[in-house]
Image 1 (tube, rainbow, N blue to C red):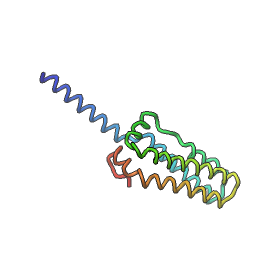
Image 2 (cartoon, one colour):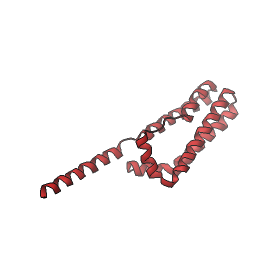
Image 3 (cartoon, rainbow, N blue to C red):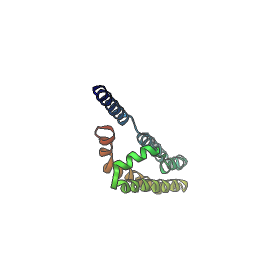
Image 4 (cartoon, rainbow, N blue to C red):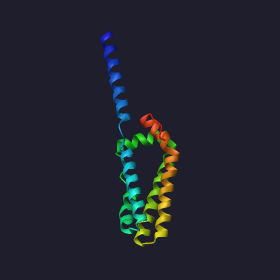
Length: 145
């Protein structure tokens, strides 16, 4: 009986350790966000040089950004609960604004490009201000600021 208790306790300890290591590892969503950040910087550079082709080529990378794997999505949905629809709404706003950005760049209309890019930036900022700190705290145990 004592050996079974020791084995059970050891297994629980190993499982908890594995969970903590898993929680501390970067999620795919974090990698997606980093890539989105790089694409935002490329667009900023394209706008500053009036390189509308670069902007038009990069905007779809924001609009159609990769999704995290299903297992990770399930974890995110579980954490977000009832706020998942708000999270998805921010993502959809970003998607639509990035498509508008692409179309404006194809038109070589700098004012439309800047207005569309501002919408992309605003949708990202709104999502980050609403969710990032809680998300980072929950999944990484650190402040998101």
